[in-house]
Image 1: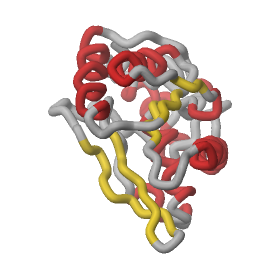
Image 2: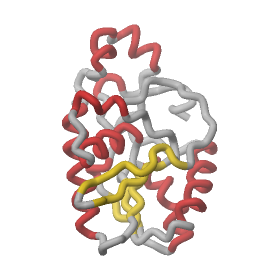
Image 3: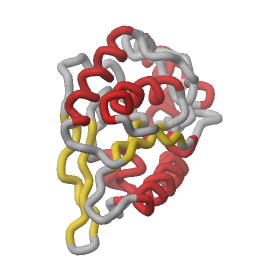
Image 4: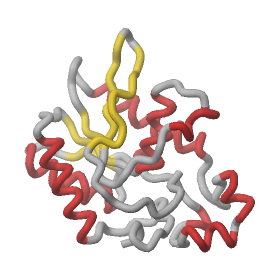
Length: 191
């Protein structure tokens, strides 16, 4: 519901609405066909509910990790895009939510979780990580060793879409981004 209302969710623990449940079911059918070896998810309700259909289809358990949570939005959580832009114009320009996490802090936190997940996989194994758009984008940028000044060149991750990362010659590569994207309006500048 908050996506539809253009509200900054951050770490506010809200459930999926009917659209989110349908998107999760569709994504689960597509991802199950890839034969994942493991499923990891943020412990926030909306991520856990997104991971549940995939767990049901594959029979795999979901391992929850609080470090996969979305960026904490501080004073912005629950506010709409227009409320943030009008009430916090300077902070909005630099995407610095008062009382919230920095992009670097989120990147470090999620990168650490991704590294721990990678360590659990057998060679050639496939993990599905169910998290949140900004958190995953920032964690992936750090995993890919991209300099911070280019992180914004990787666009936002749409709801129930995924990115594919793989290694080649010992280096991480972004193979796909926003795979499985459903047609939906872009409601806000989601960083």
